[in-house]
Image (tube, rainbow, N blue to C red; front, side):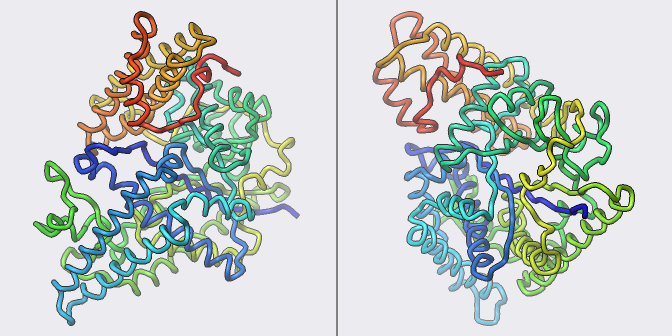
Length: 523
């Protein structure tokens, strides 16, 4: 009997924003990872533990970008996160004193304070600061299938004609995955699902079995995918491709956080006039730092958030989501009764919790309902490829899940020229210094890491979104300058040991990197 399946992939990524010196100056930029830990990653771990305890056979797919892994396992970041939690606890005590016993906001503040204290206990005591190890344990037990991704979440189509750069992004991404999870992945997540012709050959060269693309890649392929988004396809070199089903903004899950009953994540109590200043929620220059305290729903700026009503709505929305997918699969079955059918969806991790407070509850209901009412419906990506040799062969169409101007508009287009040139220069260095040691070896490794950082998608996206644009430009320029220093110095007098020590101390990303990743290309 043909199978009908649904797969969900959660993509977790954070830009590499880490500062030991001037930590207070950059506190607003660094706080994003702290909010994500408390509102997305810790709640996901708690959810998985609860499902396992209750015997729910849930199946998910997850992607952890190498930069996020580096941050989550960094002792400096872990200490800074605990400091942020302590500020939330202090702020919560002040909030309780601000509200009377009849004020509905008091109960909400009590819940937020309890969460800050519980998060500290979980993070410091239960996980010993290493929450990535928690996800690794659930992967080892078969609940999560882990996919790898590019080293610095670079938008790969921009480097499709620079094979050494593409190889470096993929190889360092795979090395990072092995370093953090001690496992070889079958799937490789393309950042922003950016695909260009030739990337499939590179992935197969690194022994990847599958990837996921936007629906346009298959629907506009040659020939077009016969079953649309209801079945994986494969490339000429046998790389399997899951076709991401689109969740439209109108009526799809992407629009759910805007429901009036849900909590407004932008109405932060610490952003109220003078509210956060005494407790460290205002950075230098006046930029606000997010806290855990939000009291307002989406619908009415003056109403008070009702957790019970939001929870009930999340359950209804989860039921509607699953019912809708069952209906879609049933309609597809009527058109093709002999084929296995599936739907593959992908979500950003911060969609659950950080951006949509009730998203964790929604996901819990989806996983519980799929286990009880629709057993066998939810599966992992690799399970959709049981009959991989029989999948339709197509030539994928270049595509992505972002608009063309996300990385190429008036605010950020100039960055690409430097990022591409950085790849060319690093490739030249790798070829010129095929065998070296000592300070030259260390400086080339620093240059390689900074080249990957120059190519990170975070900086152009921050400029595009107008999110700390000055900071993004500063970080981009600093990495370009680091590469230039090594490039110029190795061609003349050599790298300054003092400069090298400071460069290695400032950024600890990829401490095991070998600069030859830019010189040996499998493509």
